[in-house]
Length: 249
Ligand code: 5RP
Image (tube, rainbow, N blue to C red; front, side):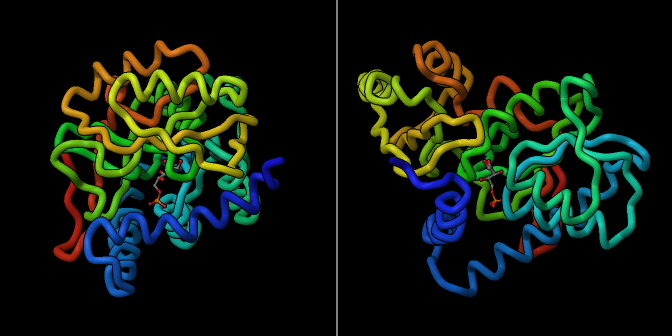
């Protein structure tokens, strides 16, 4: 039986810092500089926050910086639509009211991080297993503001294993279909998503046509959501790094 989602997801969050940093140099200094890049991106994102509005808020360490600076700067928002139980917990701690997307309708601005981004603002997301709700909120939002540190930038997506949320009973079936497409799926064992599903992390993909791949993966029966955000990319990408902040496009 998988362990309780919250505990295992927390372990995963700790370990994944090494996954991102080992893509580069894999030492503590790099982890620190990634953190300051995230912090810079989070601070720069505040200019997109309209006071008294309801905003969408994603999941992850970059978004946690964003929530913290939002509160520290005393920006008054009406509340937030949250993409995960983890983010909801943090919002509650900060006394930010949480709204149900169904009650809110469309949202003007959605703020979230990413595991990878390409020059066309297409993304890989789902490192924190929150991709399904993240993708729904991104779809329902007029503007998706994505905040990353510079280690997340790639020319071609696929260095970070692509997360796919699947209905548990379909896990092996979906994995076989992915192998047929040339990927190497690995079950993120002991992680259960907030929706009660499993995650497959697909290695070995060089994603030269992200829209086509997203479309074909979406067709596999049993797939709940694909962590490729290509059909609906970010609208604005804020990159924090050693030379400051870059805002794209
Ligand atoms: C969670 C996500 C996150 O946005 C992504 O994993 C980036 O996380 P971090 O900001 O901690 O680097 O997609 O499902």
